[in-house]
Length: 153
Image 1 (cartoon, rainbow, N blue to C red):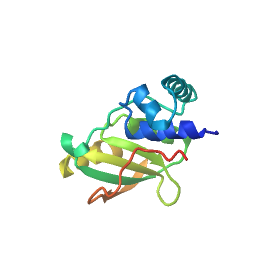
Image 2: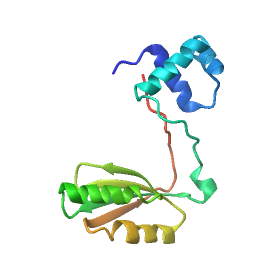
Image 3: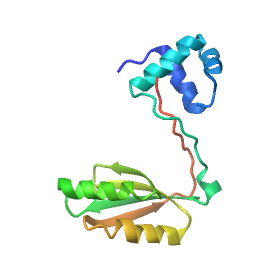
Image 4: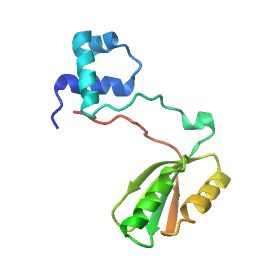
């Protein structure tokens, strides 16, 4: 998919601050407000831009522990994978789920309050799942880099 230079500039600015007015955004990227508005609508229509959201600081809402959990499945059949993925999607503390290659099958990113919170989620939502053979947990000591910005250039 080809993205023009103007669209790349629009995407870069919007990823840093989506609250800007169209006029302010147009000025920042060097185009007219009307052109900028049409480009934004086009990026939405093409599925490049999704919904606008506000980012929440996890520590400010008591979720200061980033935990990564590697999961090994007992079985790789389609039903087991779908059931597991659906179950992980339903747990709000699990903020990201990746199907990965290598020794492990999935990588989960959890934002938890404390060790008791983590234990409850692992026991109730992950290890209890019939398709899970085992897990390995990694605790992040500190976020060094965290961004939601996707490179567009």
